[in-house]
Amino acid sequence: MRESKPLDYFLLTILALIWASAFFNIKIATYSYGPLTIAFLRIFFGAIPVVLLCYLKKIKIEAFSKDWYWFAAIGIINLVIPFFLIAYGVQKVQSNLAAILMASTPLTATALAHFFTKNEKINLIKSLGILIGFSGIIFLFSDNLLINENNFFSAFLILFGSCFYVIGGLLTLKISNKENENVTASILIWGALVLMPISLFLEQPWNLTPRLDSTLALIYLGIFSTGIAWLLRFYILKHNGLVFQAQVAYLIPIFGVILGFLILNEAITSKVIISLIAVIIGIYIVKKGSKIKLV
Figure 1 (cartoon, one colour):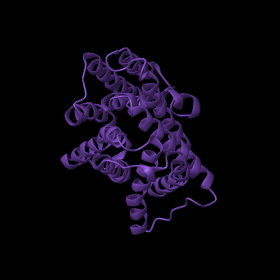
Figure 2: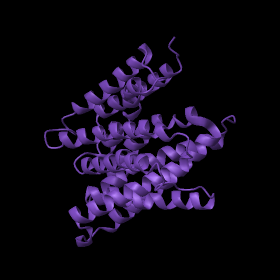
Figure 3: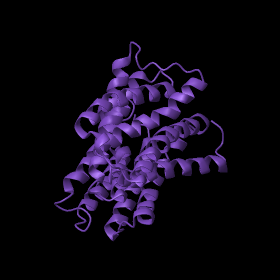
C-alpha cells in the first residue's frame, strides 16, 4: 500500500460525508415513501454505478452462478433487512440519532467476530472499547427529550439493523476469494429482486404523490450513498488498505450529527454529544485492541 497523501484523506472525508448524508436523506425520503419502497429504490439506484463499473472493467457478475445462494443470503441480510429497519426507524427518530446508533456497528462486529472467526478474538482492550461504546448507546436511550415511549421501538430497530450489517459481513467471508465489485453487484441485484415484489405488493407506491425533495433524496441515497460510496470505498481499499479505510467509522457519526442539525434543524442535546464521544472513543479503543495479538 502506498503512503497516504492529502488526496487520500480528502477522499476518505468525502466517503464519510456521503455515508453520513444518507441518514438525513432517508429522513426526507420517509416524508413521501414507505420503508420498503425506500429500501428497494435505494438498492436499485445503487446497483446502477456498480454494475456499470463491472461492465467497463469486464468483471463477471456471478449473481446467478453456482454460489447464487451466498449472494442472495448476503443481499437479504446485509442490504434488505438493515435498509428496511433504518428507513422504518427513522420515520420517528431524528437522523442524527440514527447516525450514532449505526456507529455501533464496529463494536457489534468485534463482539460477534470473537465467536464466529478464528483470528478476531476479544482481549481486555477490545472489551473496554465495547463497554465504553455501548455505554454511550445506552446513555443515548436515556435522553427522554429525543427517545421516549413513542419512538423507543423505532430507535431499537435502527440499532438492531446494525447487527445485520455485521452478520452480512461475516457471511461475506465465505466468498472472500471473489472480487469486491462482483460481490457488491451480485448482492445488490439479489436485494433488488427480493424487495421489488414485496414493496410493490405491500406499499403500492404507484398510488403515492411524492414530494420532490423526497424523490431527490431517494435517488441520492441510491446513486451516491450506496453505489458511488461503494466504488469510492473500493478505490481507497485498493490504494490505502483496510486500516486506513476503517478510519471512516470515526467521521460518519460526527458528520451525521452535524448534517442533521444543519439540514433538518435537529436538536443536539448534551446527551447526544456525550453519547457521540463515548461511541467514538469506544471504536478507537477497539481498533487499538485489534493490533494486540493474543498468544
